[in-house]
Image 1 (cartoon, rainbow, N blue to C red):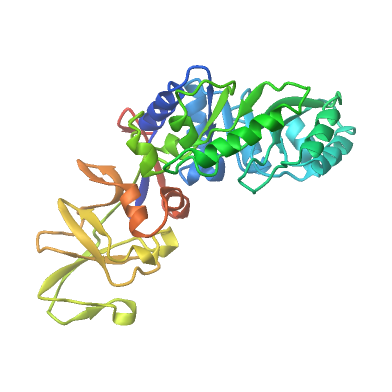
Image 2 (cartoon, one colour; image 1 turned 135 degrees about the vertical axis):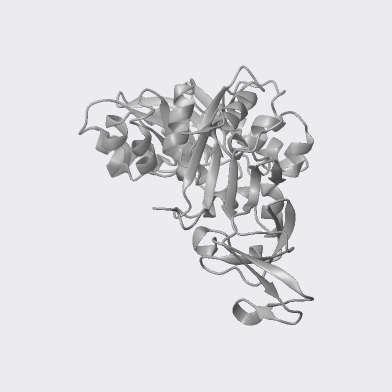
Length: 375
């Protein structure tokens, strides 16, 4: 059957791997950990993790244990760290699948140890230090000492200790330095030494690539997918990222409007003069939000403004008489020699590229390319 909705999210796997290698090469003393949480920011974690694994990547991170287990059949012998809080009653599934869990507190670790007594094997943990993000983890030095004491258990594998910069994409280092100092103070509490110490996210990976420290893992998230965490990081000019995702579609309908004719829900647009309106099959049910109204996308070789309110399944753009049914439409990314920055698309909607990617609904097919060939 012919596809009635030619809307798709194209994922360039070559660009993905190039970005990983570029970021990993910034500091050869650290291993790049690929963040594939939230279905790889909506781009499809199963395909992405499998591709990275086949190209030598052995360190990954997810948000949940469920996400990690779903990937273990394609990245069997890799380290997979769950960054969120896992119910201690699920410890057995982590051990059975060789998944590393985040330890956010002494209470969590105590309960995890109770559960561990009933199973064979060791639980791999990364202790989370709250250095100023305020999300999960502990900053209390006495509590950290108690956690250190619990690490004597033969049921535990103290694989890592980490924190998370909350302002590394900012325009100064002040809060980063504050967090780094807190992290170092916390590390000094531990008598047990982990295999991995990490605090850098994408922004920190780029920003502090020249820093001399004893950290040996860097978590590569949004930069892996071709986006700079902020303009501040891009301006450092330390790495040239390649766009990975492109949201495309085609024109399905074109009609001429008379000056003064209105269109769309709430009749929020009125033709300023005799003009042409093209319809594209994508809407907010696909994750293209109503606040995109007014943004200029590429239709064929033209720059066309989204007019009227974005509908659930379709939207309209103002175009010239040259636009025809079947013409290519590019919302963001690169396609057929055209380019629309996802950061510009996000900024127009007062958000960030992370949210733009994650919002693209599953109704939009993900199409993967390697060596310019569709997989």
